[in-house]
Length: 260
Image 1: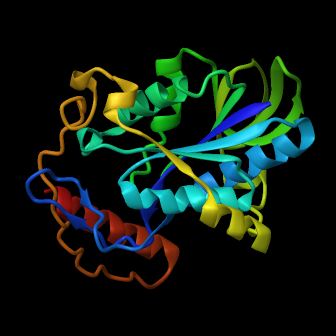
Image 2: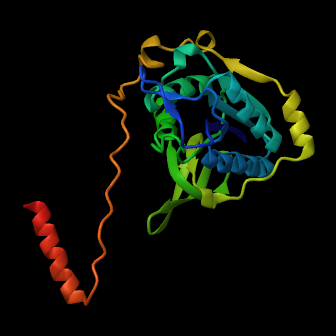
Image 3: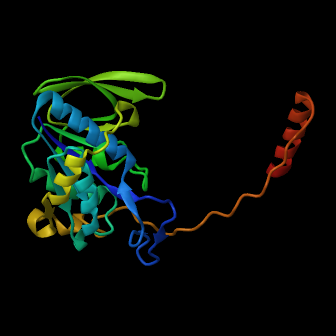
């Protein structure tokens, strides 16, 4: 089973700066880590490889320093790392990112499965995984919490819902986004760390991918950030004391005063 895992390098802190001209994150000088949800995607890919054989390829889109995330994935047991990197891709929103990653994934065909974390900690949109499946025209199953059965042609999955889960059977190739309930990521071994240090990271630029220039980077991003600002701090409220009927009456009067 040939599996591709899409990961993202994100800031380790929420205290990030915004470029005032482009309204995009400024990642320079900020310590980065693999998006936490993507760690579960890597782990699940490795477990499937251990069960069915094949290989695990990890791909990310970002600046040159994002190769550190790929090496960490290789240290866990992934076989290959691919970095999609070009200034032409800078400023991509989720649509342009999914289009670019889909273009890179086509270079890795054939594949049986693509796995992503359910969302990134810096954007929290949960859109890139489904976007990739749309561009590749393959089935998608989101919020996967368990792989029940798998063959070379289909998979039976548990998909997490707000109040339970549902069972879904999907043909392959397909794309999954996984939640943290699916597994517990492993700690890299010393042998894995040494292998990752010497691993060759393959880079894809716009020249290799030959994507439509109108669909990449800021130019291909229909999402436009018009303004970014810090919300005004909320003033302290008040605590109502007394018997419940009296508190309800006082609360109603306060609400009426706010409305009027």
